Length: 109
Image 1 (cartoon, helix red, strand yellow):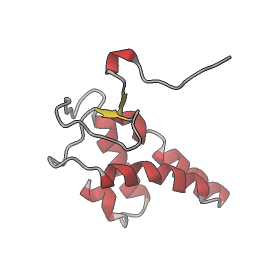
Image 2: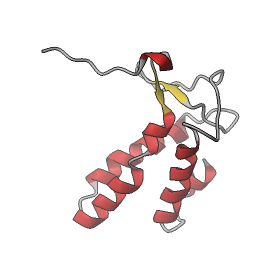
Image 3: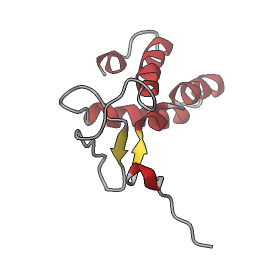
Image 4: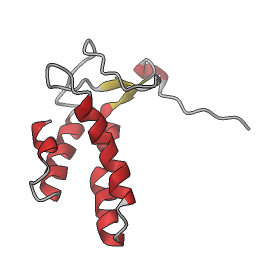
């Protein structure tokens, strides 16, 4: 059986940005609990990509184009601090707190 990964059609082949941040805390804690850093390294990569591609406005749209080699934030897409957008900012704050308020990138984002 052939299967392909794809985004929901209603998103215009974009991924919801909140989904990119939902597992950060859990995987960072898993690394702490197992003393295996690989889980945190993989999870942190998501935020590294977000930092490296932060929109000029400083606010991330709720959708991200991810079906190309590089992540692309289409700044013409809707920005929301409500549904589908607030989780990203919530997890940035919680990740910064979990890290002992020492990881400046989460506060800057």
